[in-house]
Structure formats: structure tokens, C-alpha cells
Image (cartoon, rainbow, N blue to C red; front, side, top):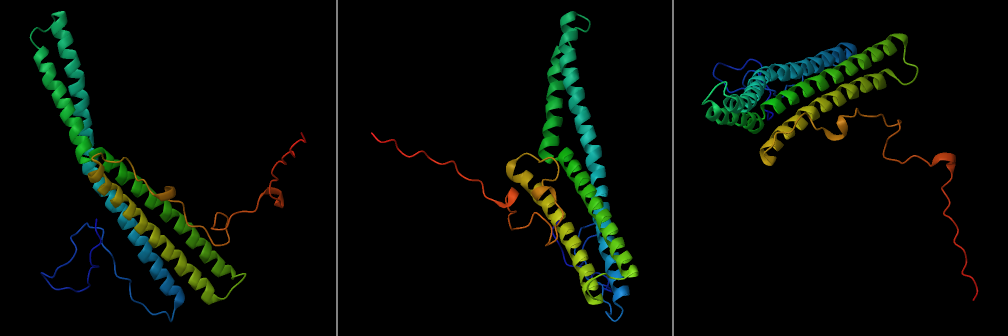
Length: 244
């Protein structure tokens, strides 16, 4: 999932380029800012298409991991149950001589569980699902924010100029693109961490749970909030030493 060169339009046959299906960078579509409204719509469609492409990549990548995880987990469960049942059947005399096969069944169960954990099949499936859901959730928020900007433009901006409104839309798209890049980066770092620790992590462990960006005027910024009541809590007074 390392970023590669953006695809070139009109490249000749045999020219190097990204493989189909990879998450690669994309060139910003050229356009004329003589019509800011049309240009902003074009940028929104470009950003939306990139988000849908990212979500589709993770949803397609989870298919083979889901199948492999189910096979390995079913094999582990079947082997464990068989490994316990066969010695019991041999002990009760229902099926004599099948106890040694129980050890082989337990070995098969351990092999399936170890392969699932070593190759990270189940954890990779969980990461793909979590990342795709995070992308879809952020895309839905962007769609509503963009609709709100469109309504504000139709009804007329209550404050600011048209250039400030256009700049606000560009900043909105830029922040969304940065969030998408951060999602992919965190998922890739989580995947790489499984090779360093030897145990595949479950799910996407993002910083601060992927909290959306807050505006400069909102709470939760760098400056601490004033204490409740506007005054600082007083320290208890110490008693002066008693005269001897």
C-alpha cells in the first residue's frame, strides 16, 4: 500500500505505471478557475470518487481474507472438538483404537490457529472492514457538509465574500483528503506493526479514534478552558504554629 506515481493520461503501451487495483496517488484534475462554481463541483466529484475508490478497495480486499479466516477458524474448531471426542470414544469403548487420531486432530487445530494468527487473516479482515466503514462514515459527513455549503450559497452568505466561501469549500475538501490519507496510513502502520510484534493487531488503531477536525473557534482547542465559576480553587490555609 505504498504510494506510487500518479497515473499518466495517454501513456504509451508498455510504459511503467501502477498496477490495477492499487491505492495510488491521483493527479489533481486541471481546470479553469474562471468559473469557480463549476471548478468546485469538479473538485468535489474528484474527492468523492477517491473516497469511494478507497472504500471499494478495502471491501474487495476483505473477500479472500474473510473466506480464509472462516476456513482456518472452522478447521481449528473442528480439530479441537475431534481431538477431545476421539479419546472419549476410545475410553468408553464405542470406537476402539481412535485415541491416537485425537492427537492428530489437535495438531491440525493448533496449525490452523497458528496460521491464522501468523498470517493475520482474521485481523486483516477486521482491519479492512473497519477502514471501509470509517471511510464511508467520513464521506457521509462530507456530503452533508457540502450540501450545507450549497444551501448557504443559494440563500446567500450571511457573512463574508464569495472568495471566502470558495476558500471555505476548498479547505473542506482538503481536510477530507487529509483524513482519507491518514486512515490509509494508520491502517498500513497497523499492518506493518504485526510483523514487528509477531501478533497481528485487531482492527484499526487510529490516533484518538479518528476524531474529526474541529474548527478554530470550537472548544477542545489548544487553549485550556477557564475554571468553572471564573475563579481558581483556593488552597486550605495552614494553621500557624502554636507557641510553646
